Length: 318
Ligand code: GDP
Ligand code: CA
Image (cartoon, rainbow, N blue to C red; front, side, top):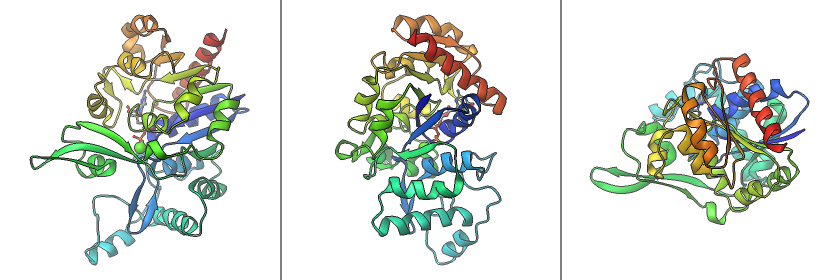
């Protein structure tokens, strides 16, 4: 079985652990979000790709959900001693090495997809991880700063401002001119099932779908497309999905997110058992829906979620 997953960071990565356990024989291709990428200290940082790579490769800081385990911050402290920031973005010493290797390879002319493959040769994530595009795409968020409306980098909104100010709009800058990375459209066309993990529908999966050709390829793949809601009990399990959903005019409910993707894209949708009341609404929108536990409290629970997603795919295929 060939499975394609469009993934952001933590939600996508944790779900993938369950999917690997639920379908150990499957060939899994992960199309990763690069809209969160940022240049810091002259280095190219790809937070979502690294979260998937570290989580599946055994290097992740488990509690935090991003960054390396057993991390130290000597480089960051030394940079700060020079007055060189930003200080609001946490880059640890071990993590720095990844960004140095990546930046060095990019400077030597390798595309991001080849660099990601090289980094994964060390981590052996058990999936094929491909960035959505080799071209630069940067998610910007429109906010009011001191009475002035302006667009800031997603990381500035999320990490620096802690999403504490209202987001008025979200834009994947550069997406319209970006091309899917080599292998992305091929993997989607060859898939037996396509899965939207419980990743952020706007700034993770939404950004991937904004790369011209990807949304169309998913819609036209002719195989089941099933998703799992990142919204449980009308709120994101963690993060700021509610804020960026509001920015695009979508309510923070499991049903509204399904409708946002739409029946043109989604065939099946899993909501948490606390949202069982939303099943009828999702089904009336032409999307097969089931309520099952969707809290990724550990590998067993997450594996069961992946099994439910694959079962739902079977059901819509029949
Ligand atoms: P990010 O790039 O690190 O923000 O990660 P993703 O976009 O992949 O995932 C973020 C989303 O994961 C958030 O909207 C959360 O609500 C969702 N999420 C995190 N943990 C869980 C969980 O245990 N269950 C569900 N259903 N969603 C979760
Ligand atoms: Ca992210």
